[in-house]
Length: 347
Image 1 (cartoon, rainbow, N blue to C red):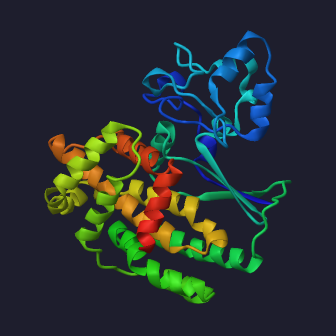
Image 2: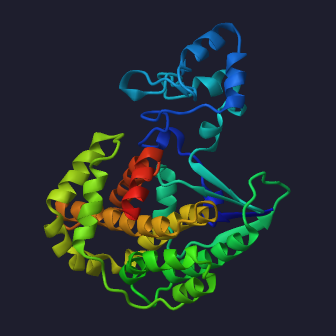
Image 3: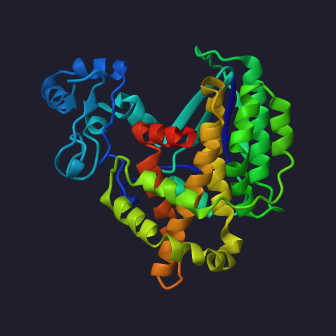
């Protein structure tokens, strides 16, 4: 099996207590069946405590949240009681994997790092060059089969799309506008198995006119109706929506000030395409990941411009990291939110 990761994947190491965030606060974590059996069979006083912290009233068990939405297994020093009492090998799949994500596509396995994690956002923000990908053969099998022809061609299409996103002879704005302009035509070609035409299309990207600002406002209006984890996000989003015209009028000035630092937008766009595009081999949907990448980058950039204006035309790397992390946590890590967004694109 071919195993692929982005070039910053192996650099990741949890910041632990140095992180300003906490992965065990605000998240309702599901427990996989195998680990749930382990927890059910854990005896003694800790076993009793552990099982008291698990809600098994529904189809999928999950850890209860205590005061201030802290995981009930989190102690007063922000350490996990499961690790302290049973070792890291006893963590459920989500806790053990986080913030990594994994996808299987026929004979291919891909892993990456989610932007919900502060350290991952730092790795993205610190990159001075384009993201590369490292591939090796591993001895592993995938039980989920997919059409080999569709997989091969979807990989070729994604490769061309990533090349376009990393083509610095075209402005980053035009590269992102390409996603919005060609999402629907590309989807039609994909449904007709016209894979070569899509590859040719993505290989000949040039300057693309921007989508109207009204479409971005519609997307932001949708975001304000979605499930919310942190009220900071609600406040930020509302501020941007209410001042959208002012922020958009300042975009050219922002671009001039940060034209040498727009690599963060390129690498963020590459992250979204890498994470979501290949799922089309099962869903048949390339429109949604393209539009999701475009609109996500629009909103993230508007967050940056808003903070830049609010801070007297100054924007720190930390500000950009905070915006990336907040957007990812609120949007990517809710299946309900992602489903509503994809439905919005198709409507």
